[in-house]
Length: 245
Image 1 (cartoon, helix red, strand yellow):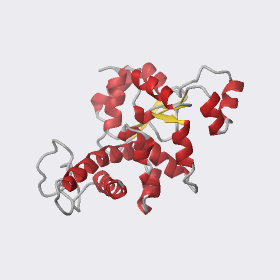
Image 2 (cartoon, helix red, strand yellow):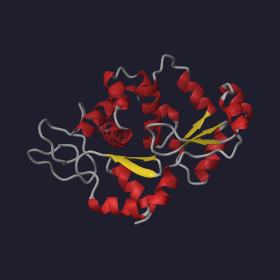
Image 3 (cartoon, rainbow, N blue to C red):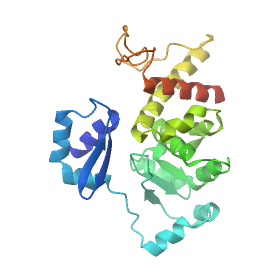
Image 4 (cartoon, one colour):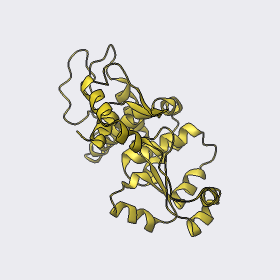
């Protein structure tokens, strides 16, 4: 298993990795970090630390400061491509002046969900009264939905009191929520398009048939209720997005 494979497993298991004084520190729910995965992380320690390091732009500090202080309309005209690391988001994001720059990055293999154009940023910020947790949530949603910002913007408009608490939660947990919400929204859309009323039983593809004590959506073990915490939040987000669509 390579260092990148290990980081992919880390993300899928909802584990958060950080570096401090040359060491790798992790935060995870009970049972998420296995002995095998820990051994792989230790064996690829230096490479993983390098992958976790904030991306650099190749600009000198003065030029970088000038770019970051640009009004967005000026950035759209005169800016350069910037790869940055945002707190709470596992992957780096790209800020680019124009849609053509975004298309270039997509051709290079960068997910469109990681790229923000100046126009998308202006559209997001024009909503007003956005708190940092809303911005983080929308950035995560855009990454997980892999599309343009218009698909994530309903999260800002939706009256979701839960969204703030969700965005304050661990970023990896939030990413799992949006990943499942995307699947659930597709199921709701297909159900509605078929002319049926109500909402289908929303499930994660290839999840086992639920039994007593298991989440009805993903099949994981739960202490009580019908769904695990991730699926509960994913259902709320999917319903909000489907309502706004």
